[in-house]
Amino acid sequence: MVAPDYFYKTMYKCVEQAEKFSEKTAIIFDEKSYTYQMLIDSSASMAYHLLDVRNDLQEERVAYMVDPGFDYVKVQWAIWRAGGVAVPLCLTYPFPSLQYVLEDTEAKIVVVSPQYKSMFEEYAVQHGIRLIETHESPSTIKNNLPIVSDDRRAMILYTSGTTSLPKGVVTTHENIQTQVSTLIEAWQWTSADSTICVLPLHHVHGIINVIGCSLYAGATCEFMSSFSAEVLFSRFLSGAINVFMAVPTIYFKLISHWETLNDQQKAEAKDAFQQFRLMVCGSAALPVSILEKWEVISGHTLLERYGMTEIGMAISNPYIGQRRAGHVGIALPGVSVRLVDEKNQSAASDQPGEIQIKGKNVFLEYWKRADATKESFTEDGWFKTGDVALLDEGYYRILGRNSVDIIKSGGYKISALEIEEVLRTYAAIADCAVVGIDNDEWGELVVAAIVIKEHVDTSELNMWMRTQMAAYKTPRVYKIVDELPRNAMGKVVKNDVKKLFI
Ligand code: MLC
Ligand code: AMP
Image (cartoon, rainbow, N blue to C red; front, side):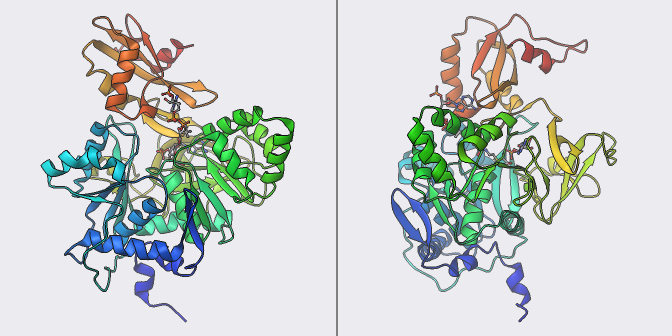
């Protein structure tokens, strides 16, 4: 039977999928299990609460600062079911960074786990924001939720880039549907799978690849409130998990922890890893040394893939077939990939080029930044990633990025310009340059060269920076210099700044 047209055009089908698995465990958190039915019912209830007297939030932005776990997914689905746009907030942002997101999205509703309420109370009153706690229930339940078409905006995630302020990446329900379905097909997710989410939930890696895929497939998703290699290892040993996804830094930390185990514990770990079906790594280049060490530890060849906030995942090593170290694989189903030279012409087959992407996975726009959106696409509709790759015997190999101002540290994308902008507001700093330097654990380490007007205590500066931006963005090393290395045009030469830290 052919389904009616509207069936295909409604929002991301997380709830329709959940109905197929109603009594199965969807989420495990804090030693409690939650079924898919609980998720369906609670998200409906929260959706009515968000709607209040309205029938449809009509793409109103709803920001939420909710700990990983059942409530996080409940709120996310509720926003979608009420016709709103989900704006997850980073749990470790200091208030100025949160305020930036609230102002940029003009969110009029903020949902919080109880412990975050006090952070927003005064601001909410001043700005007419409705502040809702995750446990609140609606006073009245209506009979139906709005029908949300799949071309509507669903989510805004903030990404740092080549501008000093982070940009909101807007994805539609169709984009999310495509990003999730593609991975389910490529990595063969099923309802028999169980995964554990250790990633932050304001980025696609955690949101799409872990939560999105597992819950769409009817699998079980366990949450850890924050990353700990020791606790994670104990969860691996329990035998309850068979799919795992993380960034290279996490595998580095797991390897370091494994090295502290005795021989018997190592053997137990190896046994436990035999039950795994799939282990994936991405968000930053996976060093071959980590892939090789993890293979010895677990018997698994990590599946490396390549993605971006704007596109979800685009390129992946195969689930079945050769996973090639140092390579990110081939285009995912439904994703078109090409490499182009500086003239935007297809790169010669043995030459590197910028990765450009087309497909229903590609985002709609940068929120309220029409110019930035236009600039990021070619005239014929390809998204320009800014990453440079080579096609090497059929597999893509990432060579680097077009911009030195984008740093990847711990899997987070960090803008050097954003950090410099904040550093320059520190009264004793005359000038500065921020770069990423190679680091085994973090991929790149954020460091800053500063020229000072008066004495600077760098530990005080460091503490102050943490009040201005998320700790993961702040420089790890400050070097006081007389002047910054510049070229004949007076422009700071970032590659020379890097040399100051060798
Ligand atoms: C934290 N620390 C760092 C750091 N981040 N030091 C150097 N460089 C960094 N980047 C320090 C902290 O200051 C602290 O030290 C100590 O490490 C522990 O901090 P933490 O915050 O508790 O760290 P931890 O929990 O261990 O975090 C490590 C991590 C985290 C790897 C779990 O960075 C993480 O979750 N990364 C994943 C990010 C992610 O999801 N990216 C995907 C983006 S989407 P002190 O001295 O202060 O105590 C994307 C698309 C795609 O990229 O393809 O997926
Ligand atoms: P983000 O903007 O946080 O989504 O980060 C996306 C960026 O992460 C990409 O543009 C790449 O630079 C980088 N990235 C993601 N996966 C990989 C990978 N497997 N290898 C190298 N870089 C990667």
